[in-house]
Length: 231
Image (cartoon, rainbow, N blue to C red):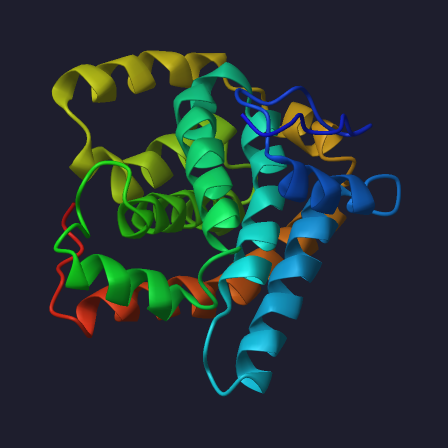
């Protein structure tokens, strides 16, 4: 690993250290805002940058923004450890790739050329996994907000079933299901995120709204090249 992630006052240690570039981005946000605000603002900035670039998403700022989401996985505790481990590793790969490739289009075009889009360790495969991570947090927040008083267990179970379970083996699904019982309560999560019941709803909606066009853009990168999303 290239380096170690700086510790933030509102987070626990990650499953795998973020590389130096990602650590710098995360550390720059610490002490200034809550983790939810940091993530929501970063995705809003990313969307504005994509619009300014004519609808093209640049890899370097994308990787920096995605690095912040690791804090949200950490706040969910051991139940989502599997997701945090995979997510951080894939984000690190994309951040390093950002030194050689300008846009998300570039890495996908190169992997299509080399016939390795779905190959283990390819940048395109890692992009697909990061997109699933973003979608998992988005779905969890949507479920969290759907019903007042909804438990985190119910929200997370439904979100996992929608986003990740279709791509996991029975053994992994069973292990994740057992881990869901270790999730913090709704109230504990709000405290961990340094939010109130009203502010957490506002910031979750910001993330949902800001991440949606990014997630849609990534999906369309694959679909426009006749690459299905069932993997």
